[in-house]
Image (cartoon, rainbow, N blue to C red; front, side, top):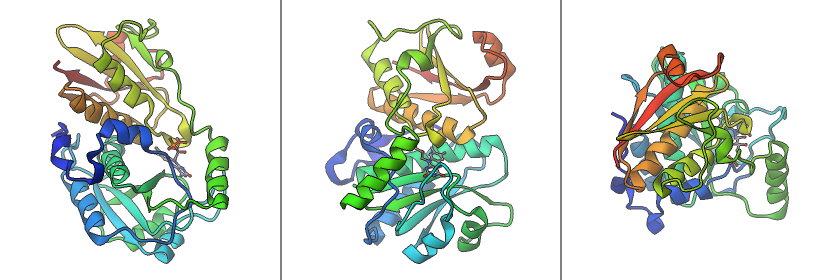
Length: 296
Ligand SMILES: Cc1cc2nc3c(=O)[nH]c(=O)nc-3n(C[C@H](O)[C@H](O)[C@H](O)COP(=O)(O)O)c2cc1C
C-alpha cells in the first residue's frame, strides 16, 4: 500500500502539517545529552511499522539507544562529512534483500519517520556514509537475510555556539541549504521541455516545492520530474544517478504533500522501466523510477 493518511498521525505536539515539517527539517550533526522519551521513541517505531511502502516485503526500522552504543557505530573519519556526534539514538533501516527497489522503499518508509520526528521537535541526520554498517548490524536484532542500508541520527540538537558553528561549517561544505530551482528539476510533458511555475496550479506548486526540499546524499538532488497534465495529474520521476534511497525520500515528500493539498494519489513503481523513459524521451543513462498519479 502506498497511500499516506497523515491525519492519523496528527496527535503530535503542535499538530504541524508535514508540509511545514518538510520546511523545518535539516540535518543536525551535534546532539544534546538528552534522550528522547520512551513513549516518543515507541511512537516513532510504530509509525515506521505502519508507514506506507512500495514493495511486497517492506523494510524495517529499528533503534539503537545510548550515546556510547551509537558512538561505536558512527564512523571516526571525516571525508566530506563531519562526524555526527552525541546522538542518543540511531534509527537503523534494514532491507530484506540487497536491491535498488529495497533501498528505494527504505527511503519511502524512513523519511516519513524523519518528518514525524521533526513534528515532535526532534533533530535528525540521514547517514549512508558516516557509520560502520557491520557495527550497526551487530547492534540490532535482525534476520540473517536483512541488511543495514542506512541510519538516521535522532535526538535534540545542541544549541551552543561550537555545535552551531560545526553544523554550519558542514552544511556549507555540502551546500546543504541550496536546492535547485524548480525549473531545473521539472519538465513539462517531455524530457527537457521547460516547465514554468508561472500560472501553475498552487497545489502542484506546493507538491513540487516539497519535493525540491527533500534531503539527498551529499545534497546531490538527483531527481527530475516530468509533469503530465491530462484528466489527472501525473508526475513521472527520474534519477540522474543511481541513488534509490534519495528516490524513495522524494517520493515520500510527494505523497505526504499531495495528501495535505488534497491531491490523494499513489505511486506506481517503474524502476528501470525503459517504456517510461521512451514515453517522455528521457536522456540515456537517466533512471526511470515511477509515476505519481493524483486525483484532484
Ligand atoms: C540518503 C542520504 C544519505 C546521507 N548520508 C550522510 C552521511 O553519511 N553523513 C552526513 O553527515 N550526512 C549525510 N546525509 C545528509 C545530507 O548531506 C543532507 O541531507 C544534505 O546535505 C541536505 O542538507 P539538509 O538535510 O540539512 O537539508 C545524507 C542524506 C541522505 C538523504
